[in-house]
Every structure is written in C-alpha cells, then in structure tokens.
Image 1 (cartoon, helix red, strand yellow):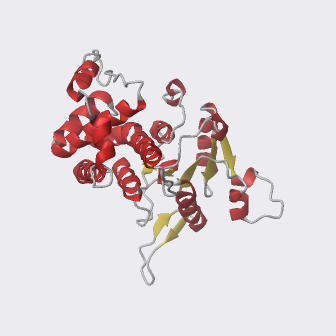
Image 2 (cartoon, rainbow, N blue to C red):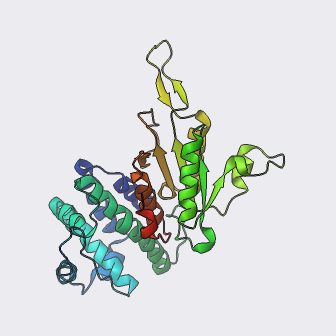
Image 3 (cartoon, rainbow, N blue to C red):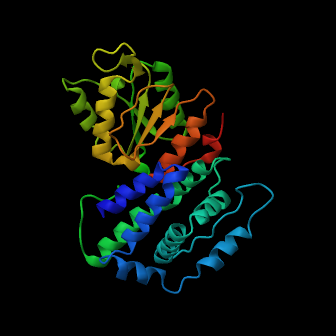
Length: 299
C-alpha cells in the first residue's frame, strides 16, 4: 500500500514525459499477486468504452465542458478507474486525450494530466486502499489520509517574512470557508513553535509559503541564491510527515532555491495574476474538501 501511495503522489507532480512511467508502475501494483484478485473482481462486467462514449456525448462548444457520469456504486467507480489506469499504461496517448476531454486545465498537456491525477487518481487511491482494508480485514498505518468533513476545514499557513503573501492566502482560504491557522496569531502559553503546531492536531491541510526571505549557497561560493527561511523548510518537512504529501501545498514566490529531497511535493508558483488560487483549490479538492469554484475562479 505504501508503494501505491508513493506512486500516486509522484503522478500528482509528474511532467508530460514522466507520467507514462508512473502510470505503468501504478497499473503493475494494482495487478500484483496480492491485489490481482481484488482488482479483477472490481473490473468485472464493466464497459469502459460505453461509459467514456456517454461522457463524450456531453461535450458542448467549449473545450473541457464534457462531464463523466460516475456510477453510484463505489465499487463500480473503482473498477472504472482501474480500467482507465490499465489503458493509460498500455496506450500513453490515451491519458492525454482523456485528460484533455474531461480534466482540461489549459493548453499544456502537463496541466491536464496533473489535474486528472489530482481529481481522479488521488481520490481513487484513497478509496481503493480502504476497500482493500475492508476486503482483507487488515489495518495499515501508511495509508493516504482519509477525506475530511466540514469539521476539519482548518488549514495551517507556514510563512516567512512576506506578510502580503501570508494575508492573501489567509483571506482567500476564509473566502472558501476554511479557518486559516496563522502561527503568530496563536497565543504562546509558554509553548515552543512545534508545540504550538501540535496543539492544532485537527488541522487537515497545510499551505507552505516559500518566499525569498534569505540568501544562501555552498561554502566558499559567491553566487548566493534567494531561498526560503530555514524554519519554513523545517515546517514543510514536519507537515509532510504529519499530514502526508497529498495534504500539503507549497506556494513558491519568484525564482528561489527549493529543496530537492521532498519527492512528490508540488511547488506551485505564487503569481501576481492569482492563478495560485486555482492551483491551491485543486489541491484542496484532491485532498477531499468541497470547493466553491465560483469563488475560486474569481480574480
């Protein structure tokens, strides 16, 4: 199960030229010796082509307007996604065509497949793992975080010295009806920073603001580069370990040095045009939260 989790997180940040490798790995995992009986039972008697054709028939005059009619039976839904993953593994162009039709996020192929991974494959992996647990009667601590309900609509904001970026993110989250938890606004009560973070165990998501507050580089080198504060990077790693990578979104302002050791973490640009709002909203939705896209799409 850990391998499925890691592969799905890799897919969320995969570029066009690496998506094929990760989707083939996911297909192999779903049909491994242990999981093959479960996966085979889920895909039995499902007509994938008829389902896709029905969705394509909803396509209007606008690109990306086609919608899929997902079955009410959760096991049939799992079966459909398994068949899609298997098809993408066999036919690389199939993933590009499918994501362009049903998960259109712009003219770039990478944006489409990443949007499909976030909205379809991440929820599938969570539900598939839960299904395997029920089917086998096993419990595992290394699973994807479960979908959170309204009571967990609290988001921790990790930030440096850029107060403008911090306030923009906080106010946007509040517009989406999340409670933004900002460290400096919380009472100290004699606690260390980590203790203050741990006091908010109900937080279901973290936004990490990587802003060029410091400079640094290799010893005896003059070419220093802008980078985020070291405490921000520490807290990035902390939340990845605590919440899982699927519940952490890193927003990066400008051309700054970013850690290379956090595999699977997506660094979204914190741009002046506000496209970061849609990127953050997609990550929140993929983590299981309901999003009002009328608000998310406002400039």
